[in-house]
Length: 97
Image (cartoon, rainbow, N blue to C red; front, side, top):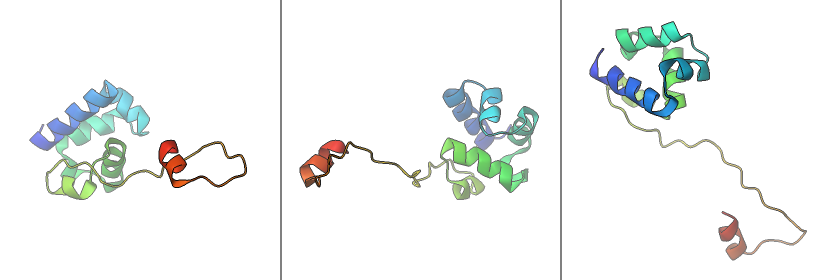
């Protein structure tokens, strides 16, 4: 196993406890994930690489360079609060956030 793949494997185990659980989360056969980590990310199908990097929050473009960098793209978030018919002040919005 190469250094990059060893680091990715460590991240997976740290976050998900096992490769099997992670592979279930990303809907990928465990054998495929195991093969990717053994053969190398560069030798893998781009769809599978994206499944792995997206779930781990990694920048896929940096993986190509052999670097593990967390993506600065954030998932959309929803801000929810009870609304009783009056507009919120800036202070109230800060408190809600």
